[in-house]
Length: 413
Image (cartoon, rainbow, N blue to C red; front, side, top):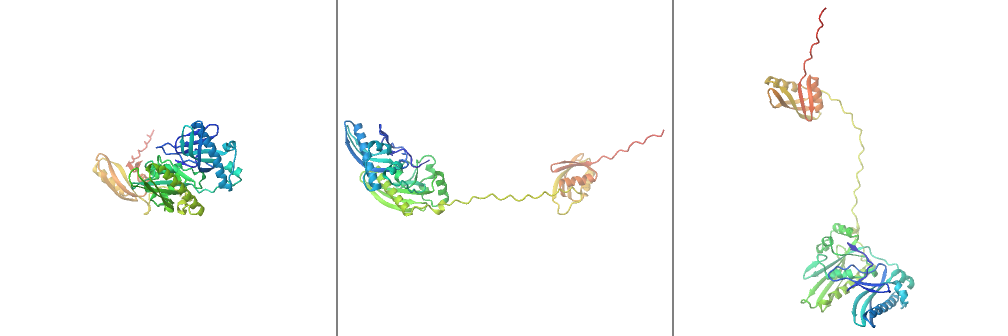
């Protein structure tokens, strides 16, 4: 299953809602692969810091989200127009599509947080007077490969690296990521071994399965000094089956509990590297991978020939006629009848051999006959010599025809 720019906004903890403000923040729960975050068609500002006090924790949180909207709009205006801007809270409520909780601390009457604010691209662009057209890459299948303890994993097991990529809010990215849940057939099709294969045919089959035209491999190798201690992550980003290098860097944390923060930082940095590569023209689709094998065209039917007239059976057969071997059953009351029958059949033109294979004196013997012609032609030849013939598949039964009776002579009066 693939997810492409879903409309649900996810963060890191539990779902929150601000009543009356039309703002939503949702967060993935631990142990379950999070749905990729980011709202379609949104401008996004992250890292908005707020520190607000209020009579209650809920009032402080609402006040913090209000302030985050104002700060986020000012930062967006600064980025797009070069100067800060301001809007009323009611106008901001109409264009804010989501608030993402990055980190927060909630006290009895205080709210400290780092938030992300998403704005509707069309509405914000029209207010700021900027073009909202963005050039995106073709759909790219993302493969999050993690090496830990010398063992590589993609979707064989749920990994923190895969969850970090699903947390990426890709609404503002120019890379059209195709991200997978890692369930069902994903574990079989996209695994560690597949990332080492260079063959285009199988990669093309996998990409067609998920609606992508190319693939990206984001790899991390984790090195730990001791359990719970410092962690060094060596990150690399590659493109295509040949794993063309895009970027490579290392990050370090002193506490293993901060692994999610390490991965989130690395994901943002790799995403930026991919966007830069797309702008520089280095993220083009592999020509061989994009090529499709030619579809075999059905062969044109051969012109039908007029059927030749079937020749009538003839006693005389040509030497080139097909040879037929069949059984001939014949009544043999005594040994003399056997010899006479063999001689009579051998005397038929076209008969090469006639040999009794089953002798039954006083009954029906079987003779094997080889004849230059068809079974129907042999039957006609025997009937022309006075035999009474009964025909079956591959067998003839013959007997001498009864002599005609003389008609009575009328008496003289």
